[in-house]
Image 1: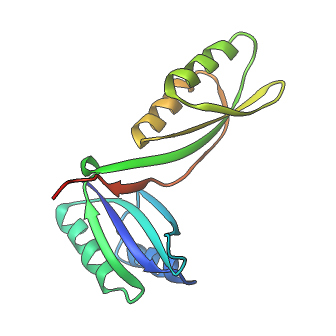
Image 2 (image 1 turned 30 degrees about the vertical axis):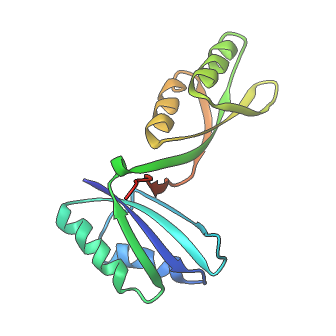
Length: 160
């Protein structure tokens, strides 16, 4: 079972280390982690995706709420969130596969952001599932390098 933890924290040095330490000490798994400032530069948002049993996920939430630097913890299922990742992928291309790569990019709504005589860098920002699909679709070409962000997530908009 996976859960997303949206954790508002005080934006100061050492907070990330403390939260990561909590996961490490208790052997909780972090599937994805992304941190950034909010509209208030004194506050950061940590988006942590974790997996485990229901009991483990409840324990994570309780432990996060005990941290002094934590302002607020929200948890939600992936199905109740809009999630996005950014991936840059550098591929080697030739005359034989160039058109196929470009068509894959078009279908997947990815963008070619840099190119040389033999290399192409592609950017895609989408759900984690689509990111995995893009990697799978490009697995037949020579992938040189991949960089991915952690998953960002916000709970879906729901009317009261």
